[in-house]
Image 1 (cartoon, one colour):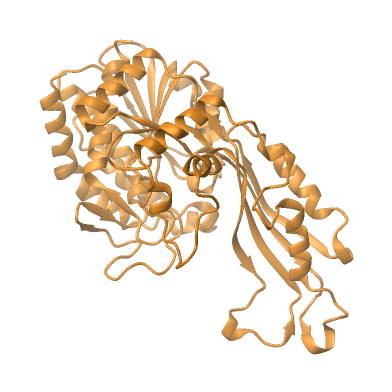
Image 2 (cartoon, rainbow, N blue to C red):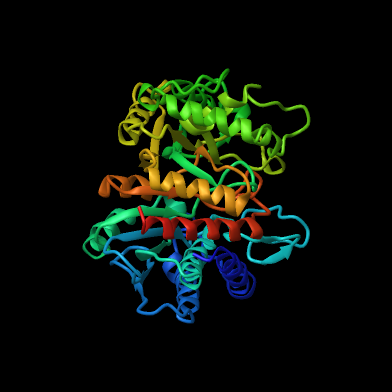
Length: 469
């Protein structure tokens, strides 16, 4: 490939074609189904699909087939089939168009559905996670062609349920598998790394197990002065149940099924990543004054975030706001329990153990209800083939001017595990433009536009190298 043409093409596409359309996509409130039960009626997921489909229809890709696929009672996905210039195998490029909820407290002048470009950043919900992915995938293919390179058949798959744990993807993978053919490379653009100076390759992703736990002691609230000391507190019972799951002093998860031995190669990679970007994990966190991390050992922090189980309480109900609280012994306490699991842990076994621990021998015979119980396995990448390692070395030298590094991410992309199981011989390039301070899932989410362009160029180099492996 002509490297100068490749670079010029990618940058031109991002400046002139992608940024305007991506900005309009940010404005679509395509909230993932888990957070918008009325997603069908609202139509925002369909609008996001249609927006990207319309943009794709303007691209000059000979023979391209663009299709909206929707199975009954499932979220839609967009499938883009680009014939290869050589070879008969398939590269599958993955991303998603659904978004996290907007949440409050965005900075002045910013908002979840208000795209703002400022200092080389595109602000808005979904800008970094993960609405740019389809644009970047198509731009990489176009750039390879413009620069005189080659690429295999490329299938771009953009789903609309990833932020809900991708519950519909197993059905779609089964439905589409005859059409996908021999997938030899999977490119996922829903990830990132520890800085914006290099390409980061994600080598593992944690799994998840989550549930809503409701502890009920009364049919209705009672005067706390009359009932306390007679009726046990639902909060105290919830606290006791949590003690079965987690050591409150250390944060260690007590469920055996949630622990695995960390592979030695992942420990080595963690050390290399910290050496390349020291201080990033701690420095990018918006600490409250005086708060410190759970340890000063950055390698241990990396392993905690990538290979060890954690429990977070991500929501609650039955607790009025302080200004609304009266002298009432509340009838129930509800908590959202969110576990992150090691990449190789059995999520089904883990969630069943959680169910047993929370519903067996409950203090005072309180009623415990579990709802919205979900689980998904993590993913541990196969070893890199020599051709892919060489291509990444080329990307590091020619595109970034810095060596690529690996990262074990604490987030989950359930589709990677499904694809690895379906295509055990495929190579995986899981990367992306997200950095440690991109604010995914929280206020002020933003995309580093120059870094996204470099990632796009890196993917183009890999697509070309894939044809000569």
